[in-house]
Image 1 (cartoon, one colour):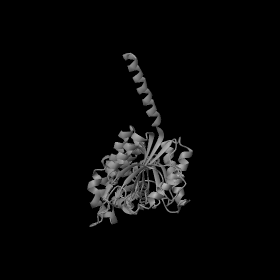
Image 2: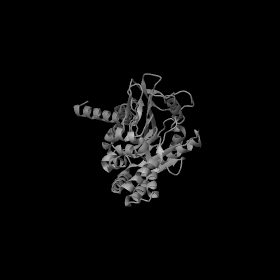
Image 3: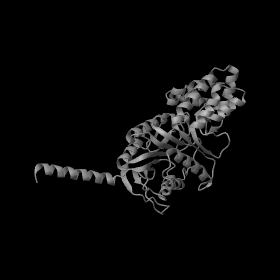
Image 4: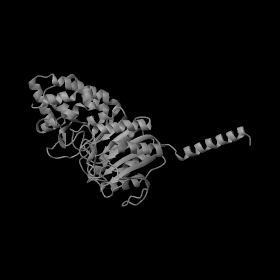
Length: 396
């Protein structure tokens, strides 16, 4: 065989080999990545939720991938979820054993996304952080150190802060080459504008609960069944289905009857929403002392979610109106939220509109002093100056 023919043959062989590799690493439509941190008192619900996922498993359109930490063992494992009929034991194979991992480190979440992208490529990504959640800040109790934010790891004492969660999604978007299609917290109190704002440049749709989630969390089996029956759903359609299915599970469904909330946000509409809140905050700050007192009273009476300083945005606006104050931007806030919130699934009351915001007043004055410095650095505050209004309301 002459030299030219030999080179040609080698090239053909290499080309054929590359096609074979590509064929074995087919790109699926979706990756659902569940960063399941059971290194805390929620540990028993971890295998329960994974067993729910295993009722459907992964399919030819969707990979369901889990990074699982459990307080009952030292090693963290990664699983490609496969279908089985055993509802008591996790049988999905361990595709990677990581040993000891700090699940309160945001970089570990990024590593999980990178690993999935390299080994299980997909066009779209649905990233879930499963754990305790506490909204945007730490619990402020003198003498008590208790992590809030999200993904508490009791082994290390670490957690992923709101700012770090935004960093994790920014890095994830770089890895996959486009915005993360859906980010969600299977955790309490994460339906807050401050949390969503931290990832607005890197995520398309955001799912979170304004209120606490029951320990059982999401109804993974029923949600995946609806998704798999219509895998061509857009990300917007998917988050609406998820929010509705979560509510149904606790509204007489698989989890019985509990008062719950689940919101879906279109982050492409966040800028308009933030600008309306900025204008409203500026208008309210310009009121006379008597009217500022009424605004502070509205904040104190607005629908709260577990903590005194987490309040419903629209209920706050409505109470200001009922106290006889109207500014041009108040209706703009309502209109902007109608575009921003594409699903508000809740069975609590008619004062729960889908978005919580930081409003420390009165009984939560200590939350103001404990968190105001950090709040100044949040993207939401940098865009809206919300801290200025909060400061104006203190002591009223």
